[in-house]
Structure formats: structure tokens, C-alpha cells
Length: 153
Figure 1 (spheres, rainbow, N blue to C red):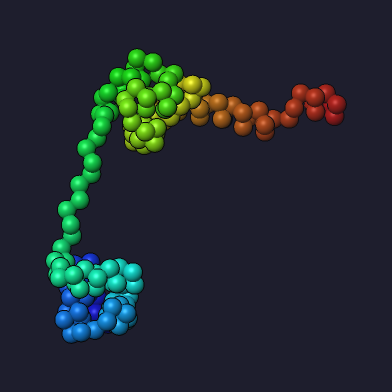
Figure 2: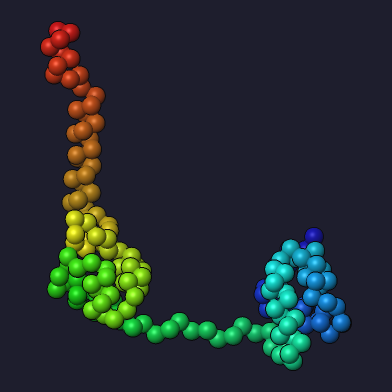
């Protein structure tokens, strides 16, 4: 068995070949799945529909992301101004959807704790404090309780 793994471009080129051999979409799909174990049936039918309309271009269409409606700096400035704002309030100020604010805050590593937006990652001092507290609680759990020492003496 060959170790060749076809790209999407290779599969589409093979579909053009099958189309020119007058194969139907279902048969072409079956052959490609048998040979490579790839390509969805719906995708195959969509490409055949495109070929029937006379478009044989198998390259990927250029798709760009829509331009950002606000920058991280603008969002950070609003948070610096008042870090108790909700996502909806931030969205209203920037004239965007709340989901866009949610995604951007997550990418910036910010979460809301006790009504304030704070970095998600703990700094060194906070990590050390958390570790010390956990060790203290674990030691307290392992020691016999005060009441247990008095009662069983």
C-alpha cells in the first residue's frame, strides 16, 4: 500500500478526471473513497455540480477574515477605564455583538471574577500563595483533630 496521502487539490483534480471520463458523482466518490479513504459524498456532488456549470477551477477560493471592528487596545482601554463592565456593556460601547467581546476577552486571557475582569493566569506570588494554602489545609487534615485528642486522650 502506498503512503501517498492526497491533498484536497489532488482529490478535486481526480474528480475532474472522472467527470471527463463521463463517470457519475456517486461512482467517482466510491472510487476515491476506495483508493484513498477520503472525500465526503456531498462534497463530491458539489464539485460535480460546479463542473457541469462549466467551472473546472479546482483551486481554493480566496477567503479572508472580515476586518476587525475594534482592536484589542480599544477593548483594553475600556477595561482599564472600568473593569466592572459586563460583556454586554462593552459590546454596546464598541457597537459589536456580545459574542465578539467574549471571544476577544478569552483570546486576551481575561476572565471575570467577583465582577472584575482579571488575567486568567496566576502570577508567581498568587501561585505560591495557593500552594502554601493547600499544603496548610492538607497538614491540618492529616493531624488528629483537637476534639479527637481530648475525647480519646
